[in-house]
Length: 253
Ligand code: MG
Image: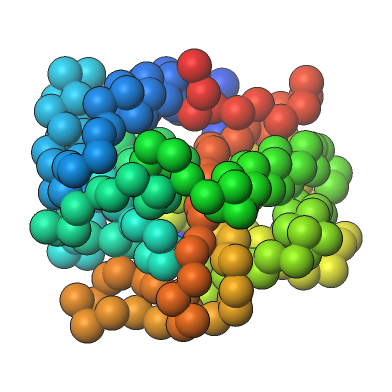
């Protein structure tokens, strides 16, 4: 974790590395996405992710991070985030949150997407759409001179207007030479609060949106976060640089 209240400002050289890292990660996620099939286990997904990461000659950031056993966090349906790769089988109609981090030239990149497995219920499709859109609306607020909570507020407002709920216990974060740097970025809150955003900040923004209650619990494995009511949850994440030209999404092709 970063030092409290210390938000690093990246130099142009650092930003260039983070840009390259983001592009590589976007390509990796895209390849993993293309190889997903009904009947795979989440462990299979992790193995595929590891192979693809190796192909890009970057380091899997999550493997071993505080003891996490996989390269990818693979969270199915009621699992919100931090799902451990396991024997759980992907069935038609499931949704899978795939969260992957890499290290490239000593800098971190982090992204997540929630994917449908085969045909999914229209209600789940809507959950995915709203969650991804809320991320985009949050990103639009990542501009110089806005306050950090303008991002948080935009996400919450949109999500709650669709009667879904925002997870409170897990939040976004700054990113750079460390996977988790200041600031913490909640996906809820009043606007115009917290630090003022400055050119060169890089933020990992990651709304987690639930169909039912916002409350979560951690399973006995010590990692997997699930919704308390067992209803489904979606999660999207991008790394975003704050630039003079506006928010720049680093983790896209
Ligand atoms: Mg993250």
